[in-house]
Length: 235
Image 1 (cartoon, rainbow, N blue to C red):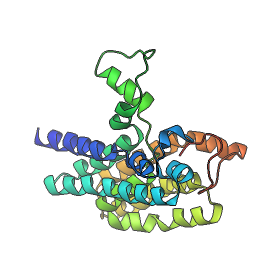
Image 2 (tube, rainbow, N blue to C red; image 1 turned 90 degrees about the horizontal axis):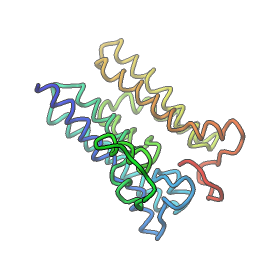
Image 3 (cartoon, rainbow, N blue to C red; image 1 turned 30 degrees about the vertical axis):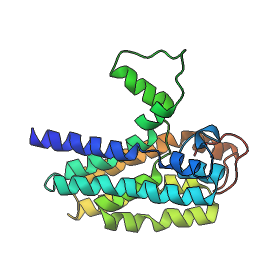
Image 4 (tube, rainbow, N blue to C red; image 1 turned 180 degrees about the vertical axis):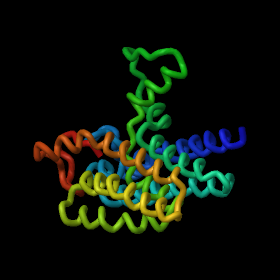
């Protein structure tokens, strides 16, 4: 029971922090509701395109912190349960992508029809709670979980971003590389298997939420990093 509680609490703790819409409030400082621009998402990429570098900087710093804090709390509360630490990271990523707070901020749609709770709540969050893709917040969470693997992984996506100037390509590079780095540490006894399983799930989720970006990359319509908005984009 203690293990189950630790795991569920770690997941919930991560979700609560991850779901906080940093980009939404950062945009409001520049009188911009980022939900009404571009992709409508509150991630750093869409904030940069719709509200500029100041709001982007606040968003990235805030997103990293909201990833770091719940994982550190989970490690402090349940030091013996590595699975709880891993689930806190997963909760952060899920919360950032499908945020209860963003869903509650959305205007009610009288035409919307949902199932009975709790399934109806999940439907509402999935439909109205779009946050960002979650790369910055997940990087912060992984940094708190396993700093060495994160620091080894980080330079390559950053180089990719500087070279190709597509945030989505850099994000997908990180999603593919991090599990490989984590596998090395698991096989050499430096990390538990739960961390590797976490890295695989993270990679799958990040690829999934980048499906629109992948399609635009295929068709040559993806915007480069920092390019201001014209048409709707996924941020």
